[in-house]
Amino acid sequence: MSLRNELLNGPLGFGAAPLGNMFRNIPDAEAGATVDAAWDEGTKYFDTAPFYGVGLSEIRLGLALAKRNRNEYRLSAKVGRIILDEVDTAERNFGEKGDLFRYGRPNKIVYDYSERGTVKSIEDSLKRLQVSHLDFVWVHDIAKDFHGDEWLAQFELARKGAFPTLEKLRKQGVITAWGLGVNRVEPCELAVDLRDACPTAMLVAGRYSLLDHEQALLRLMPACEARKIDVVIGGPYSSGVLVGGKNFEYAPASPEILARVERLKRLCEKYNVSIKAVALQFSLAHPAVAAIIPGASKPSRIAEDHSALMETIPGELWNDLRRLGLVSHKAPLPIDFHHEKAQATASIELLASADEVWELIGGFDSLPNWLSNIPRSQLSEGGRVRRLKNLHGEDIVERLEAFDASDRSYSYSILNAPFPVSDYLSTLRVIDLGDGSRVEWSGRFTPVGVSSSEASHLFQAIFEDGLKALKRHYSK
Image (cartoon, rainbow, N blue to C red; front, side, top):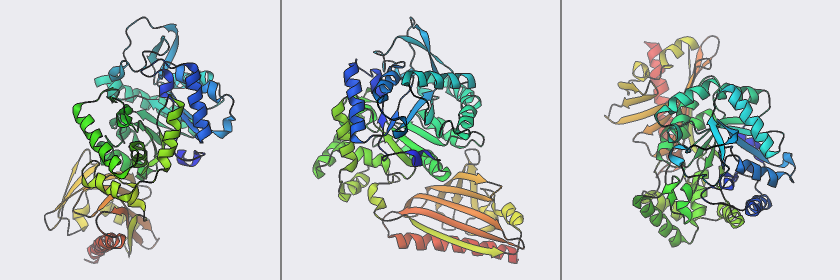
């Protein structure tokens, strides 16, 4: 069962980090009233972590949810930090987020991404939350913003400890999904390529918002979509700067960021829509995204979030966002899905065996061996990216997103090409027919500036011409 299919009442969840006294000392009553408001508005997914206020968020969330039936909501927490029963007398080191929870509890925190630490972290969270089980678990903050240049070493500890431990719990049915909970794209990119103990979901905070999404679009989001790894978006308001705050990345926003926010606000005012609505609906528009969890510490903010999710936004605003360069041209927008994604599929049968054909075309660098209109291919990034040159001298850059030798298939996305589409994902597969084989080439994509039929005809012709070239290869 995927995370997406486990959500009980839509994609809008509640990020409970503010309940840990983020930036300010929040009264217990206000924290509890905020959770109650979320429940009353229909929120049925809550996310927290030991780090948030050094356990304070979990304690407050647990108290507020204690009056609810545990089967009526979904709950996620995080592993990687252990809270000790002793006061921290030393200066705390929270990496780039140094002052984030200075109003939280004074207990000492230690990092522990081992198997033992993972199990203990879950057990401790269950006690603070006063619940019997967690639905989703995130490996927290194995990234440079907390560990500096040592983040890869911490990632490796988690890969050997937390990852297989959580995968075992998932297979046992103890949890439904697990993955990374981070503020950076790089560790997620490493994790999606794992063959053993690969995450089944990702919580990505701040990296797929109106203000910061281009890096995620290059690699992470297409890879997650290809592998059916559900993405949960945290921090859709970019630490508050999109909704009236002064912080971006939990620190005072730069003049450049503030200027961009002003441009977004003016555009929203032009069409008389709230910037919250644009922010939430933008993040949710990507097909890989399953849920979004804005944080709140005031009850009034909850109703705003739910209203924003349902607000009608004119298509002209989305067009202007893209035209003015306020979002990447590669970013899927709600207006793109007023129609279904375009697609194309072609196949051909060959007398050659499936193993023989796969040996020829199964390498990501093999196109020039059988496709005459691609005379040049150059691999980079450890064989994950291929840079092609067609007969017209045009450059095409593609990324390997999934590879399955046993299935004789691979999937790839387009990073750069002279094609009028975005969000492109294609699969090449060889099927064993016993006395021969069948090769299938298919793709899905969002048309940009052309109709769905025009985009489909374009790639239908590309696939068919390519497979005809493959057949000629075996007719020599």
